[in-house]
Length: 109
Image (cartoon, rainbow, N blue to C red; front, side, top):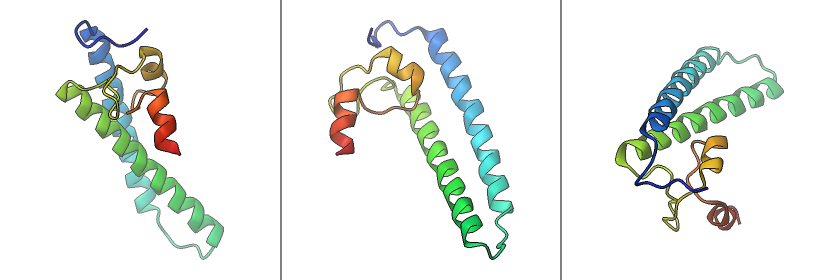
């Protein structure tokens, strides 16, 4: 089943938007917490872990912001490469996804 942009369930999109907004708030709080805890312990392993956590939080915020922007501009669920609909099942698992599976595979190479 693909997401048909003419008949998208508006309540589903509203729920998704709310869920993404909650995720955004959680990730922003996490980023703030990680930034405030950025004390140098002198342990290179700890510094590496801290940097990885910061990068993951920033990436999550970027992905969430992108999905919210696509919902707002009406392009949510369209592959950014081929412009075809991304299957709803894929969007349910990965709500921030930007590409259909074939295009994602090409993008990852």
